[in-house]
Amino acid sequence: MVRAALSQLGRFLRRRNVTPGANNDLGNANLPESPQSHATLNSNLYPSSNSPIHDIDDGFYRPFLFSKAFWPEFDTMWKPSERLMETIRHYASFPATGVSLRQMVQFGDRPSTGTLFRASQFLSEELPIRLAHRVQDLGELPDGLSEMPSIKKVQDWYAQSFEEIINLPRPSLTQEVKTRLLRPGRMNGSSSKIISEATQNPSIKEGQYRSSPTTNGNGHANGKAAAASGRRYFVPADDHADWPPELNDYNQRFAKTLQQIKRRHDGVVTTVAQGILEWKRVRQRMQIDSTIQSFLDRFYMSRIGIRMLIGQHIALTEQTHIKHANYVGIICTKTNVKDIALEAIDNARFVCEDYYGLFEAPKVQLVCKDDLNFMYVPGHLSHMLFETLKNSLRAVVEQHGADREQFPVTKVIVAEGKEDITIKISDEGGGILGRSDFKAPMAGFGYGLPISRLYARYFGGDLKLISMEGYGTDVYLHLNRLSSSSEPLQ
Image (cartoon, rainbow, N blue to C red; front, side, top):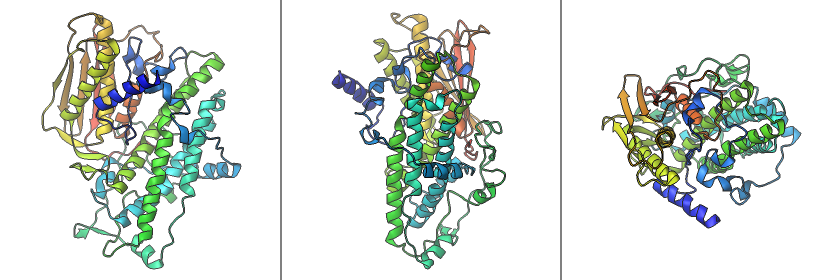
């Protein structure tokens, strides 16, 4: 049974050109069992108590995600000390500092040792603040949710990651090196220009993802905000001479620590989902209230931001992007929308055929300019398109019957504007129930669509639905092409 499941997982990963164990954030691989999966975004965003656990997030390999065999190195009884929790509470009183996509690419494809060291110093302060906010949130959930075993496990993961970063030994530097690090650097023969402060995220209402009363969601706050306002992710260093080996050694040790933290947190989405199910069973609840829903939105948005910063810094340090043109870390400065869309269509149709046993999945028509490029994270765009297409194809098959020889064509239309790129996905899957009392939560839908919406909002876009009950659904994916909007911080 295990061998068969692993074989199926390998087949899926090969189909998506993904290397097992590589730096990938895979989305929901399985097709949900229930109809009206698009209703996800018009109702509660997270699964009901009768939702089978294998339908949450990573479907094909779900049986392994809660097993000790899958997470051997993190199956420990580590618990935070009271002193550590006091330190976490102190860090949680500080606001996070927002970073825009455009700021992340200022490093260029080959940042110097000194510039990377400055970025490492920023993250060594910024990540503990973000992790501390999540530890505090997980410990203050209402109605006994914080006491669920899976929630406590995730809280311990965040606390342990916090401890590893703040306890990482700093290098011993001479005064001359310290002075050089503080001296403004030069890039391409001229004084470097640091991109101005990130702008307000247009898709986020003020305070929408706020967990701390001191922050407004843009890296500013009352009180202790002033201490953080001067910190920047990108600060070019003075590279007129070689840097001591201690700096490179620290950069490598810091990146290795981030790698371990990233692996530890791979199972966060599914473990939190398990915690919600545990709470529903204990409390005998069918739905979650608005307080918990807001927490989940805030928590998963924060996770996207943390993994984005970690993934980008690891790639810059290890130079894994050098073999790919137009990449700075995990960001592609010329992401081709058509190429990503074609890949997502192929993957979604493959999963649909495999899940329903179809000879041929419903066809998808793509209307997109060949040369439509913009700066984005290809992994994010691929995830959003794959999840949306997968749900559209599922709706079409279940609306018209899996035994049908031909299905209505699902259309993907990409429009280019001055400030954004809009992708419309139109299906004839029967639409969403229009009754005013329709409040069914995801009921087996998986987390794909709501988390896709958070991915879109992270860099100033959005994902919206318009449904015609009895006919089909239009999904509008808006992508901010200016790349200057700030992260929606917590």
